[in-house]
Length: 174
Image (tube, rainbow, N blue to C red):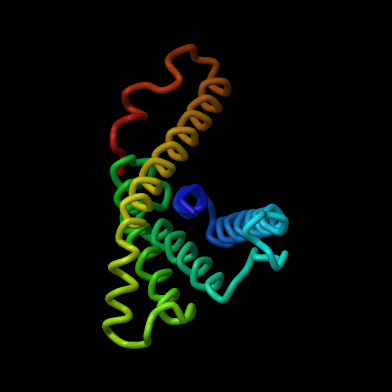
């Protein structure tokens, strides 16, 4: 999920909302279908069921859409690494809360009690650290690649010959 979350954050901060939403939605659907086809013949899938989409899918897609909207609201037009990483942390936390609540609500793995909800979140804590780390790393990588591409385009359009990533482009921008 973390590469797609980074894609949602970056596209939300740099693209018009309809385009960003379509871009992320198409990416999610295509990746889910691809993973579903790969898992179709996996050794653990003894029923050979197509496992791409589940009752949890709307929660996952909705959570990524929320991250895109958060990026749109708080990062629009910004290439600040600090602000992007702050949004990545917020996005990881809301994704973890939403999807683990959905697991408790829909999976039948936990009793529908406050203790069942607490158990669901407690057992999901090990996944949170990897979600946080992954979202920050992928968001950083996506932003730096975006900056490099934008600076390279400016470099070739201007005819100037200087560093592609100068100190000004690496400083935290508003």
